Amino acid sequence: MIKIKEINFQGIKQRFQVKKPWDDVIIFILNILIAIPLFIIVHQNLINPNWFLNIDRVVLFLLMIVVIQIILRFLRTIILFCIILYLLVLVYGSTIGNYGFNSVFEDYNSIMYTMSDNPYPQDIIIAKLLPFPNKSKIINAIEYQNPKIRNFAIMATSKHFKDIKGYSDYRTIIQCFAVFKEINSRWNYVSDPKARDYIATATESLLYFSGDCDDHSILMAASIKSIGGTPRLIHTTGHIYPEILIGSLTDLEKVNFLIKNVLFVNESNEQKLHYHVDERGQIWMNLDYTAKYPGGPFMSEEILGALTLD
Image (cartoon, rainbow, N blue to C red; front, side, top):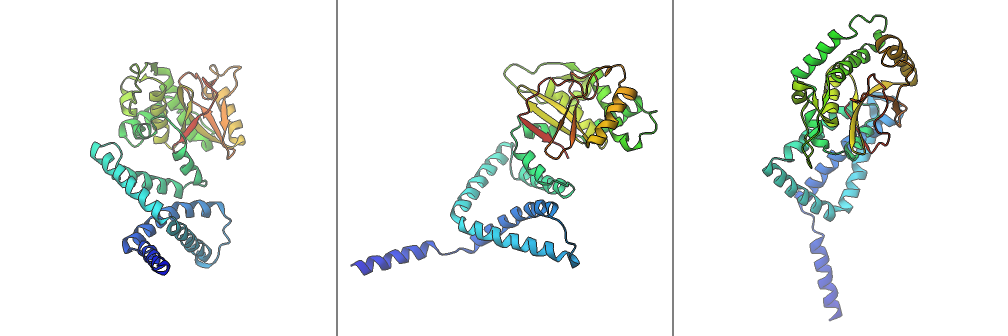
């Protein structure tokens, strides 16, 4: 009787260990989707020995696929359950038109595109994971490729600081400051409806230059990005405001001189510049609607999240 039970137990165990072909296909596809962004991060952060035909990178990628495959196969049951659950969520999201299969594809494609040109690709992943209110809506509202936004930004660069000469290395920043001057000189703060966040698109805010802090940040970020600047949005307690990437401390010295002696002489007189230094040592300058000059005083100091638009 004991042997029969042992045989039955082994039979049951073997039955559950049967590997289905579609399991392996799903696991391998997931492996590739994980390996590609992970490889980009590792590639950018490792010294390149410049082997012939980049053989070292080929070996690295293959090694990563093998390691990830082993891990995924070990967690096969849990992963397959999570995938099925995630697919059901996407089906529901596609049905109600909120966040579905097309949105996942666009997000993944966007991450791959931005990571490939970023010296710190891991920051792209981190930025996606950081808590940020209404992140998806805000990203969609920053319509920097819309011709109306770009035309507005071009108009601002023609209206302000067009005749500044001798600072070719900082031309883009000067033009972004022209956009800042145009928006902040016209912005009219209007609150959202009670108990509801209203996220206006950049083109919507362009009509009347009115809205709350997130509407201002969206328009500022879209306009700056449309002419080659690098903006980011900062989330603090009850507030969102835009910043612009200045660069290194050397760049900050140059920009400080420009603001105080050339571009915003009266507004910045006897004032100091307010900025943040990120984990990479890069300088980000405040462009809040409350500021009369780039680098004006912060309305709120505590940073709860950051949304960088590379």
